[in-house]
Length: 420
Image (cartoon, rainbow, N blue to C red; front, side):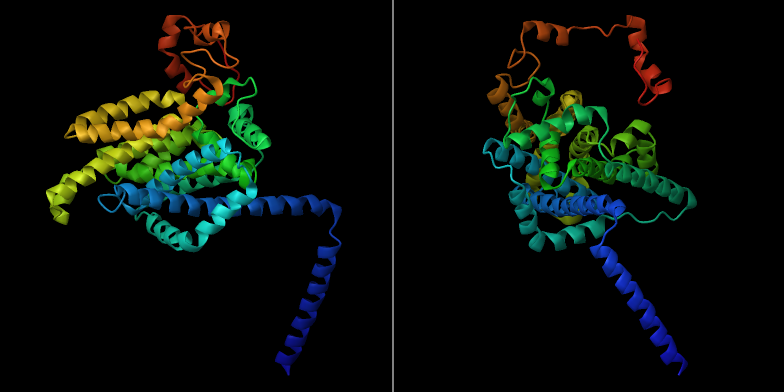
């Protein structure tokens, strides 16, 4: 009898709740209408983010089948996952560039690609993701570092879901893709020299804006922070075994790094690509040869392919940022020293050139200068502007220039007005 009364009372409460919910769902208060639209945009952004991760993972696996260097020799599960997704984003950038020249910037086409990839890409993506998840450290110090990393990533994730306010993002990282999507094609019809800067980031951000909004572009940059951290332990273990969480905490402890992770910038894309190239070059296959009992010919092929993949990521670093040229030169020296023959050196150089070429050709076609706005004149770029932009000097005396890195690091304040 008691249970019957309780059931009737619970049913009455649920019925009243259902009536109120149905009423306010139909007669939504004005104060909640904007919230409902924001929630819909957020849901679309998150769906586009997850769908793109599946798509890029699938593209990365397809690209990997062509070269084979990411599987299965010598890479930890988290490294394989990061390299595959990063490789897929590289392919996605070139595809977006091609779609721009073909005037095929349509949301239906982008969502169609995501939906096509889901049926046969979701299961491998989830399997790789689960294998890549880090283990909880066994000691309290490690757990504290892991908690700090999770906190910083969580804060950056929340910032990525806020409207964009970062300076460079509004000046050109998001403005360029916005102009491309408005025109329905790749173009350089506005006197904005930054449109000639490396465009891998712009193509990835344009994909996000095509699917949903600028928030998705910010989420993509946050994703590259996560992928970079996934590669850190393997690199750190070469000099400090077991200090992967410490390396990640030091990296995210830099205020600028953690702040930019939630903005539509390209710094984390550059760091990821350069680190991925280093990881591929620094991997030692000699011990794996003995463990796997592979014939020498197979080992030679594996080494050649890993140099090719390293060249791909080195090219992507330059595709993200002109100033990555220094890192690319360093990687080229490392490839030169570690390669056992000119075939491996040639594989690295060829891959880097092939990856860089589409973006240089884009500048050549649209502006007449492949390295726009540097070295040569081009569209909207005359001699006076070239001289002004290329002049040496910073307005500081030479002795202050020498200590500028120290002053920027120790005395610098993120977001402060520049002095000097």
